[in-house]
Amino acid sequence: MKILRLPKEKLDFFAAVVQQFGEVHAPVKQNGKYAFRRLSRWSDACLNYDRTILPPKKYFLPPREAMFAYRSGKGYVPVVDGLDKRLILFGVHACDVFGLNVLDAVFAGKYPDPYYQTRRRNIAIIGVDCASDEHCFCRSMRADFVDRGFDLFLFDIGDYYFVTVGTALGDDMVLATGSLFEKVTQADIDEYKRRSQSKRAAFRLEVEIRDLPEIFEMEYHNEVWNELGAKCLSCGSCSMICPTCYCYDVADDVEFGAVDGVRNRVWDTCLFYGHALVAGGENFRKSRGSRIKFRYYHKQRGFVAEYGRPSCVGCGRCITSCPVNIDITKVIDQLRGVHNAASSQSRDLTARPEA
Ligand code: SF4
Ligand code: SF4
Image (cartoon, rainbow, N blue to C red):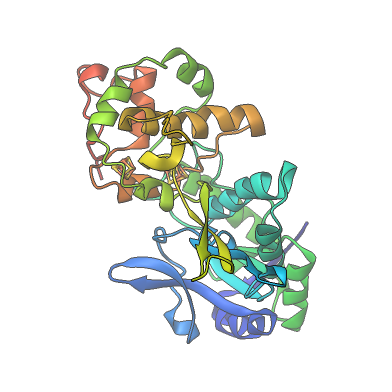
């Protein structure tokens, strides 16, 4: 692993140089929130942000994409528009890089997905460290630090960024800048350790994930699932904005004449009524309670059994986006029987954490 430092006043110059490696996208402010967008000028980039509305997942698994077309007389016609486009995502937080590493396990593992894998090869990641707010619990989910999945990662140490080079492409970006990057000193390393320790200590929200799959196993019939089912609107927001929710539906757009068409995939979620609806009209998860329960069990228990860790990275998006304020950390606390109020059974699952 190579570690260098970049003077902060040279960041603009570095951003200009990396444009030769692809179209630069970064978080920009949008109606008081943040979203990854193509930059028209570097000054629009906001590297000091809390969280983007949608995670970088949208670049690798677009909300809607054509997989292939079929044409009379030609048969199968591949659709590869945009797949080979080189992009640079500048300013990705550690938890979102971790989210991509989780998606890698799904889309680049046992069942390789060529669409996802091609994009992953063509989209570079420049990560940046961040400060936690009252909804972040990535430290609890062991996702506040990443050691892979990015090309470069920038950590603020005052007058410099402490830069970890993650790939050969990241190294090429460094080399393309000439002598912009410098060797780190012992003082830089000490400052990095001091700041990373104080960032870890600053987390206000914590959940305990040790033995959580076992707790889920034991609490399958807990009343919390009925309470959640009564509150949840099945709107799907918590899933759409989640960096590690990856379900999609496949449907054809058939043209007039029913011969030619395009096969698309679109984001789907286990929270929607139709997700577990099968031929013959049977639905395995008719109730809202069973659907939200399924989502929690898949992320915190099923994924652990299959991939060795929960798929949740603790980004806090589902907490901030739920219209009825269902809070995953409070659900976990209630299942654990954590008493932050007079009685865990009487705790309000929708109450906001104190700022
Ligand atoms: S479940 Fe919620 S906190 Fe966890 S990764 Fe998904 S959106 Fe983020
Ligand atoms: S965002 Fe809230 S209301 Fe909507 S599906 Fe998720 S838990 Fe239910």
